[in-house]
Image (cartoon, rainbow, N blue to C red; front, top):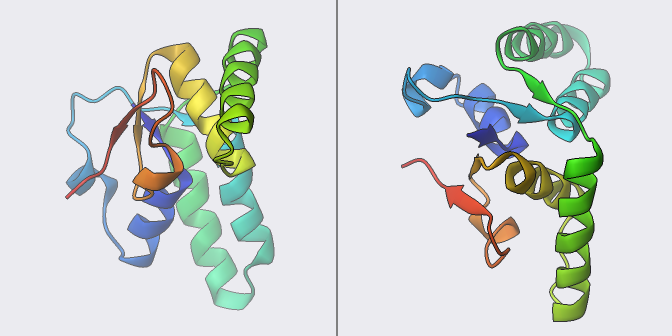
Length: 129
């Protein structure tokens, strides 16, 4: 499974432990863009919030592997980007990068934003209850 940024941000805001959302046997990763999005959240936070957020993000990045954007992901990204442009149904640039990483690595996207990933061929989505 590949964790979308929304699932991690939602867990932080609700003070949920990721273990409550994910089973122990799940093989989890995040896309490189998700790491960047989380780190931007740290940079934009201020005061106590920044320290708390930095601890949370660093714990995630220390425990969940980051999938690189490589040629295989670039090929999947190009395929998905061309598809959404042809369809006239644009998607967020970061969502497409996460979807491409999931497609290239045969992973399921775990997200709270099913709409951002729906109708992308070969991209499977799981929305936790």
